[in-house]
Amino acid sequence: MNILRKSILIGFTVLGMAAAHAQETQPAGKPHGARPTKEQMQAKMADMYAKRQARLHDLLKLTAQQESAWATYQAAIKPAALDGQRPERKPMNKLTAPERLNLALEMTKKREAFLETRVKAVSAFYAQLNPAQQTLFDEHGLGGGRGFRGRGHHGHHGMHGGWAHNGQHEGWGGPAHQG
Image: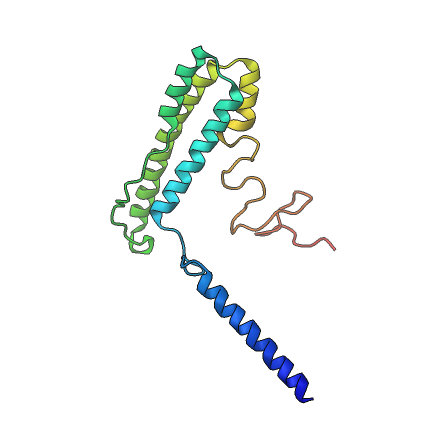
């Protein structure tokens, strides 16, 4: 019995020493659960954007005549760099109803202006592509092939309940169970 206790004690000692050694050799990085900084996220997003655009460029196999259209298209759709300066925001619950609506209208107008610029840029570039390239652009450009990322599409219904497999709405008055 004494030999068994000694073996267990030696085993735990070895495990403890191994764990301590592993902690010492582990690089001192971010603590567990730490989030990346805003600058790190912006750099990562810019890198991912550049890689997607390079992959699309290579996939389209543009001719020399199409390269200037590509450059114009890229300049028009390039995401604006965030300068880190955000205007002071009042919490939404501190705004009056008309202030909230005006804010929503302002944001909608900005989004609409962004989309109008994007439509013009894509349309001008798309017109320069041959039919095979247009098909590739449709499949791989602007998130093609990954599904629409707007609200309420492809199974995302937020807090408004889900949809039954038979197409009947299960939330807010729709049948929850047909049994």
